[in-house]
Length: 193
Image (tube, rainbow, N blue to C red; front, side, top):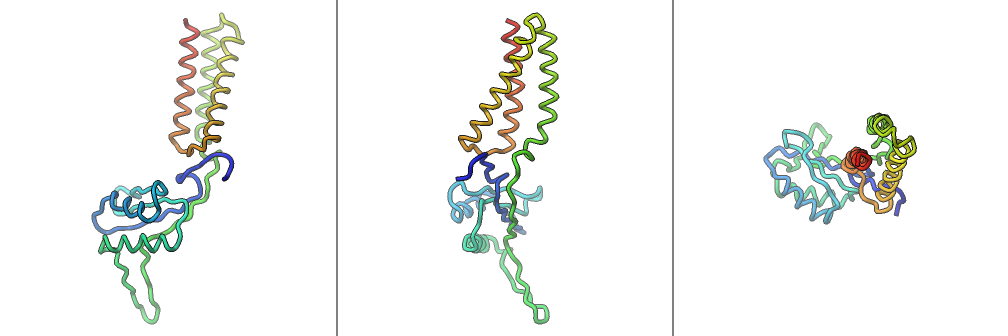
């Protein structure tokens, strides 16, 4: 087992299988086929565009046997996917139903990079506001204690994500940003009373 953060299917190494279907289809049907081929919870199915004529299946890894099995299921269900060999001169061209793209693992820093500047600005602004509003309490209680509590709570949060191997995604990062704002809100309410 790999140590560190669990980047899940979205940000960890994965393979994306893209299927263009030239007829009306339900994503539930593709999910059922994916479930049969890849097993429970080992895939993610989503549309790739607004026209809903293409679907992308994200999996950790796919074998040739799984790809062929999925192609066969898709051909059975959707007649527009039937492979016809086109012979031009002496060359034979076959049309692939599934395009496979290998996606490398994303660095954790690349995920949080967009959040560093806004969080730092908000943190500095909050510390200044705390210093102004709670100047009667002194620097230690009015500024340093809330700052240390934010650092401690964030350390516990990030450590718990790494230890429990909760998949890191945009929701985990956004939730943390919201919680930081709520922490300062709670501190200000405590100090007002």
